[in-house]
Length: 164
Length: 339
Image (cartoon, rainbow over all chains, first blue to last red; front, side, top):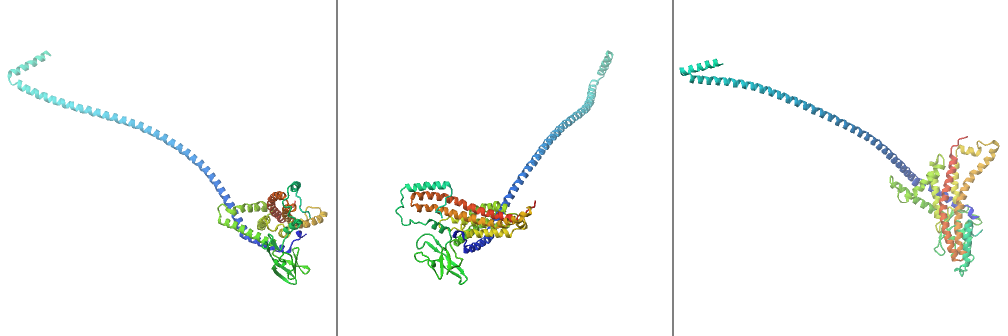
């Protein structure tokens, strides 16, 4: 029966010690421990959320960069195409210009040559005429120094004229 | 009183086998007849009950005499060592008019109020000391390792604390559960540590003492009824949604229910732990009853397994006491919607 009759002393001590324990432990242990557990939970949740957000951001950034890359590729192609066209056009034009220039130079040169040639010819003609005159003069002077000669000549000319 | 309570049929079969082996095998201790009248129930009850001395082993230094504190109307408070009640041969003698009889102290013929530091009170102090030591270390770890992974005893205790708060207290203790978390956590760990320490050899049977469980149940009873809201009391005194003639009957049932809840708590813990100790001691005593090595070997194996079960029971009883305390508090503080 002693087993079932609670002792007054033990009830008293149990109540006192247990109350002290509740107060001491809640101040000393439960509060800091539960706070740290809550803090850790929040930290972990925060880290997970952040990682998730970062992953989403990465995905959107990747999509962005892909779009950018595509755009850049297109632009590059366009620029290249334009450049090629411009190059071709310039090339053609340069060629045409060069040809025109060459033609003009050629023509000018021809004209100049012609003029020079004409001038030269004229000069030559004049010179020749002068030389001829001088030669003729000299010849005449020599050949017609006597009367016989003069007569012969005149006769030849007359003959020639007759012959003609 | 039966010398050893049978737990179940399997247990009985094992005992019968042990008995058979014990009879057929040569009995090595058979010559030793001096303590043939081995008082099993006396030893067991003596262990399970409280005491004014702490007896570890026989001999001069084997006993710790604890202080006695008594109060009587005539003499007021009196403090002296319990060794005064024993002579050299460990026989009880009266001291200064006080008499110790069956662990009760009498002055003349009247029993005095006994506030002695008994074996269980020392055990209580040890339990409280260990609790504070352990959880101060955990709190220190929590402070030191803030923002880092837990370490050492902190990482062992934190999951248990988390389990008790998140799985036992918060789902059951109603909308104001946070307010009761410190009490319920202390309750859980006090019972758990008390149960486990009580299993140590030579330890006192603290949580298997009805005074201890009664005090704990009384705390839950007081908290439940002091935090009971209007809905709680209206359900007890004038249960809504019930035909009028039935209400007085329900009133009685509910009023009885207020008291049966904590009584169930106190008896469950007390019975589970005390019964565990009695079963263990009974099986150990078989060796001394039969004076047989074979029985000793068999009962030792059984004791190992039942000790393992007792470890489980230690956890389960702490869990159940906390769970039901949470539930009672939750029922008293819940907001009822009327249908």
